[in-house]
Length: 233
Image (cartoon, rainbow, N blue to C red; front, side, top):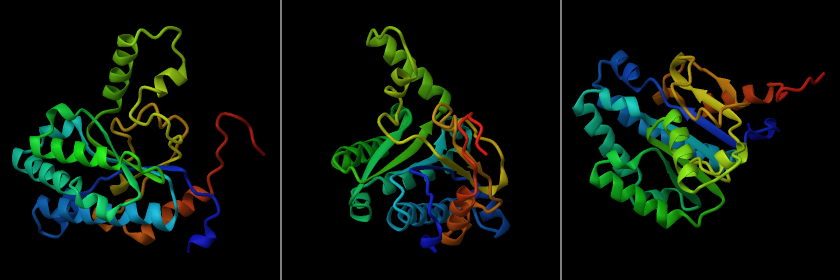
């Protein structure tokens, strides 16, 4: 299938939505949806990197607003993230740099330790980058950038200055955003980076978003006429 896709994004973002609804429709607890969603996450990341050779993948896994969910669900998600960012990550993705997007100060100790350790151990990997958004907010990312710019005494701020203080510093621009489950909004995801990104909103719930669905999304990207504000015939 890949030989039919001549134009691929260099940076793709996923808003992984629909785990709970997927579980509810099957009479399962929400935790089952999150567990299934985690398996899909590994599958899709591998496809993006190793099948389609997309250099950067960004995942919106847990927003700053998600702390308002029931504590039992939050605790389960934190345990999944801890396992996902453990040393096993390096075995599963040996060429991938893990970059955590989000405020780590609220992470449980176990998650904070595993995420930081894996980020350090993988920091020299340059072929692929996984931006994993946990306790992430696009607005908070911009506030963080502005505060750090002020702290460093920067003057005459331009776009490049701001980009140098984002979690995605030095990375290719975000080309394509996929939000599963049919919801058609960004929900505070990468608000600066999304400026000229194409968007795609399949109705498939995230746990059911497999290889075929990814291929269909990338095929959709092929047909987009990306003008970047200019007129193209």
